[in-house]
Image (cartoon, rainbow, N blue to C red; front, side, top):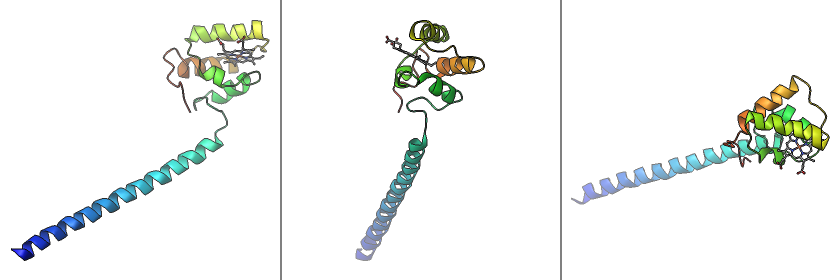
Length: 123
Ligand code: HEC
């Protein structure tokens, strides 16, 4: 009787140790991964703006007068953004943005900052 009980509990202990080691490894791995993500965040130039094609055109044309956060907190349809940029030119003195930048920016904004605000609040 006794030897069998010992062998079962030894087996259990081995399983437990393996499980603990496995969890510890997982924790270490996720620490490393989040460390890498952090390093990338520090290199990111475009503030809170969503990382996608058009982000640099948008960022550099729009932060001349205000934070990019004012852009990121808006959700507009494509027409809404067109209207807002007209308003920015007519009422706020923004220089007219020439093509192809204008279309790139409108595409970027209406994709990533539409009325469902897929990237709000991001970062
Ligand atoms: C020439 C300066 C200037 C530039 C360049 C500029 N803006 Fe603005 N923007 C303003 C000013 C000034 C306000 C604040 C107006 C107010 O609240 O009275 C503003 C406000 C805003 C707002 C908030 C509107 C609201 O309803 O509160 C958004 C969104 C915005 N800008 C988007 C942009 C985007 C996108 C760009 C780049 C394409 C841009 N702006 C570039 C001057 C500028």
